[in-house]
Image 1 (tube, helix red, strand yellow):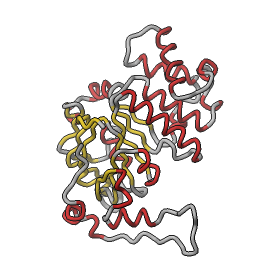
Image 2 (cartoon, helix red, strand yellow):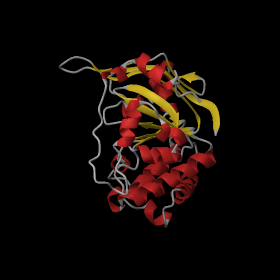
Image 3 (cartoon, helix red, strand yellow):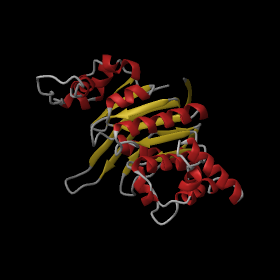
Image 4 (cartoon, one colour):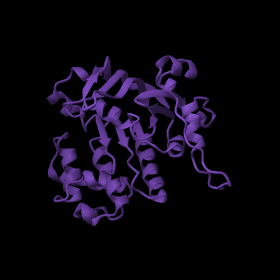
Length: 294
């Protein structure tokens, strides 16, 4: 695993206004990422997705974002203009949104959309762009790329739609891919196929990957390190291989709530939350003051 830093996020705080007052979606989030696979895991509303979107500055204007720095390849993204950020998005950092098939334009063919993602960032001929698109469709293990190239999004299956979106995000050859629950709408078999494709592409291209998910087992088997989030805070960061040995009560609670394939005669436990988990000093004590540094 190459731990050369690609991304460093320091003290990220995100607040959204509401009729009942400001709501904190992320509080003091700090981590760094090298050329590795990091999983961000937590319940719905824990701050996973907003953290990913904040990196690319894709949050709505009413979101209040305060952060010391979001440094990518030595450049602080917070200091860039919107025009400069468009240079970063796609070409340097790509993001696969939740249920990505529905991010496709329904009135344009699959091939046209992937090719457009390439030509925006590369000055190449139409012929070269089409060849690259067909190569990318083959790379995500789509059979008969020439046929799929001319299909519309409604003509492809869910699993193929996910692969097409991954192809679109990877064709500009970014250094970092943020995947926000890219397999949540797929059955288990197709999930594993898509993750295997991601793993192969990330490894062979020497990229970094942030996989946002609520599935602890999936992330533990796929990623190098895991960030556990709750209530907008990072509870702990742990090597994926050591996840089941975690001592943090929130992580233990999530693990204990997972159903076992062999079943059992007792009901699954209900996660009991503790207000002290949101105390930064408490989590530093539990995790030995570690962050997600590479």
